Amino acid sequence: MHQRNKIILIFSIVLMLMAHSVNIHAHEHKQAKGKMVVENAWARATFALAKTGAVYLSIDNQSKNDLKLLAVSVDTGVASEAQLHETLMQEEMMMMREAEDGFEIPSGASLEFLPGGKHIMLMGLEKPLETGEQFILSLIFENNKVVRVPIEVKDAR
Image (tube, rainbow, N blue to C red):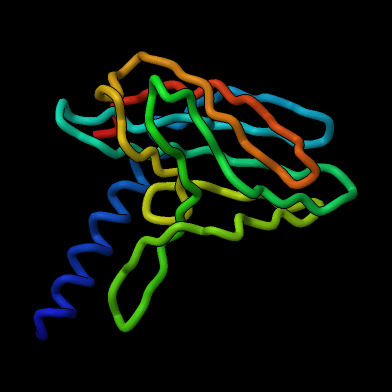
């Protein structure tokens, strides 16, 4: 087996294990804003020297209009920056990149942020994310609509 194929296989196994942990540790918080529901909002606990973290949640667009999530933000006491990210396969390698144009959420559809896929990256953590802590994440939509979501930090090992 080629070295690249071994790496892809190992990465795929890790992604499947991480996705399985979501089912175990999904946060059951629901927040309805108009006809949009944000649920299962949580962040993975980090180790002491980590400078990045990840947030996962789902957005259910129950309205008759399409939505566009443009950006996310957190208080600077949590991290210096929050970004929308996606994971893509490029030339047989899994790559993570910032989704600079945001994400469309068609009417009647859901947008899922899950380990191994779309996620919210916290850059420049001010301190580790510790199990049991909470912070607020702001979802910034088209037309200046902002939805503030409580995020609970979970140990997802």
